[in-house]
Image (cartoon, rainbow, N blue to C red; front, side, top):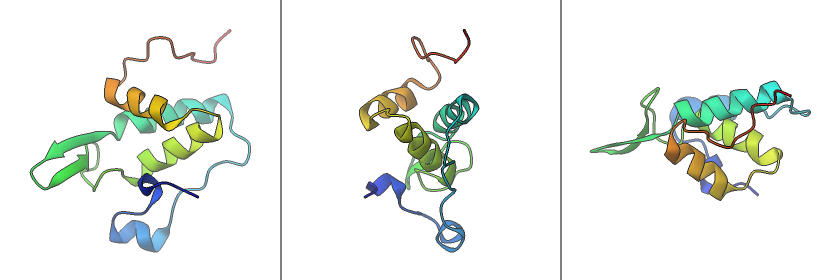
Length: 98
């Protein structure tokens, strides 16, 4: 069962649906998901929170996809929230290099 942040929020997404999570998540997928989480984070506007990248209602399609991918690798929502709030200050997050 998904959370409220997994639900489509604009008409286009309701028609097209969600982006699928890869059945086998690689290190490259995790890096891309982290980037989606950070680039497509919330920005406050008078009408409410919008994606700072594409100005659609937050959380946008790519932010939700990034969360689902990272959750599939065992990262809990509180860690993902903290990463999104820090906005790219990924101190202590491994990059997959030896």
